[in-house]
Amino acid sequence: NVRSLAFHHTPVFDNGLLVLHNGKWRLIKKGKGYQLYNLDVDKEGTNNIASKEPGILKEMIKKFGAMFQPSNKTALQNN
Image 1: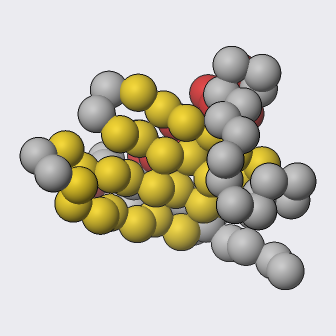
Image 2 (image 1 turned 90 degrees about the vertical axis):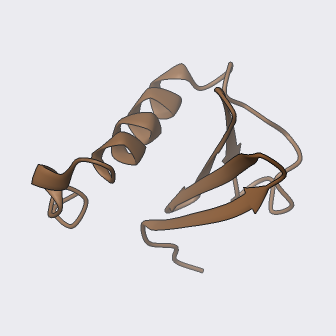
């Protein structure tokens, strides 16, 4: 099961739930916090490993931020 880079936005109460998938990784931004999941070993997304994988978390947040830069529309297509 190959996952490419994908972005989802789901309204949740007053805060939006933003989700970024990149390969086996799922990044969830809810409010000001982030959650990170390795979907290869945690298909249900129940074990937040953000504190255990700071490098991956930082990389995913960077990709997430690039999606909102108007001048970088192709930034994610090239990664």
